[in-house]
Length: 379
Image 1: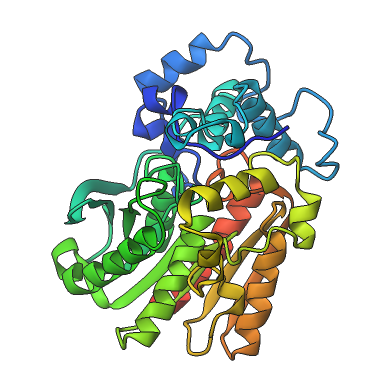
Image 2 (image 1 turned 180 degrees about the vertical axis):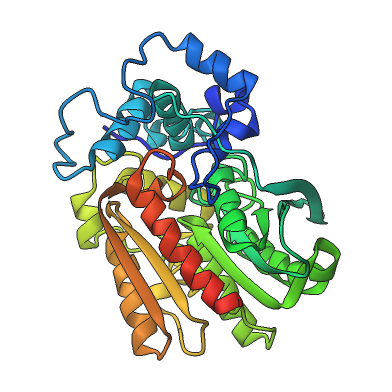
């Protein structure tokens, strides 16, 4: 099967943000209350037979994932139930309309009768510059100024939005007690390389300059991202170093796109995986890069870039992911360059698992590692 992570459509578009929020690990011990929307959604799912909170797959493990964790498999089954077309068969506009892994996780939450915790952050839209907006997540508790995390979503620089990755951004804000600036950068093929990279760096500079206006501390700023966003976060750190701009205090890179070689061991191994596989990544490169030569640019090909002087780094990796090899290579190259690195590989997980802490235990663990490292760097 050739599935790739896509923009929330259908389910996510219909559900209130509260439902999406419960994909993350709540730092609150109080029992969550179901909203009216959640209650209706659960009642409408007549196939939910599992005990409340129980996440179980219904079929055999896919041939490509013999070590898939049961909860991860359950989410993948929901994703496959959408019957998405493979990315190479679609235009970018068509791909953006298909359901995403976030939709699959929310569908599994309904099947497992999992209800959301109350949001512990306030959100607001902010225009950073023409064509670039952000969602600002501000802790409801605590005393300003808060640390700031500039977060970049995934989607291969082509699909997905800050809505798709809402759960991850909210989790980081709630668990770190930081203001999170989730950046809606411009994407290809309408805006080819280096547009997303330029937008990412401009957004980081905006956060430094305007931290006080969003209750943030300009001296305590980190960057974070998933997949394409993880690559963007590292590229931002490199540009900050090279342009003598204040460096981030930390960078969290979750299964980052860190190279353009699609023949690494993990690319060769993961040709059929969901939600991301080799063909999907090649489609992303085709839609974002102007020419194959752009793949050699150090902002894309991080594994061959000058990595000296970058901030302490946390790298989260998944087992069933074409990007696993380059993530490990990036960790090794950063270490060789003298950068402090905390690398964690989560067996039995797939690309996109990080924001699914309500249903995938390994996501809860990964968020815990990321939050501990961020809090340590931003204290």
